[in-house]
Image (cartoon, rainbow, N blue to C red; front, side):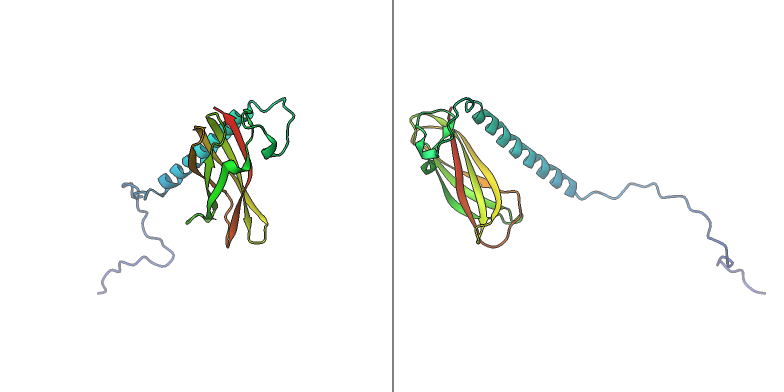
Length: 171
């Protein structure tokens, strides 16, 4: 006699098995890292916008768009002298390759002031890569502070960082 075969006859499928309803696989946490990164970027952008709105409140009605060096030192909400901000370091951020500048802001006025420094990042040929803003608040007369500005466009190669505008508002 022949022994029974355990294989299904041709054209037949194995019996239906119920799905495994055990615990799902553990998540690794990459979503948390991305989520916190997005929150950090939103907070930084929100702070810059709030500062820009705060410093822009007193600018209306003057009609004075003269060069920065022509503004009187005591005017609130005016362009500050370019000597108030100096780029001390310029390069690409490690992982992101976004342009980054370290800026020293010095208050040469006689009043405690808030500063907003616009930085332009250019490539070796002078082509525009990105712009960024460095902010500092409540800087006492004669004091200096180091701050940074970072562009949001990836770059490569050698870059240069230029101060293109310095705004000062008495605090």
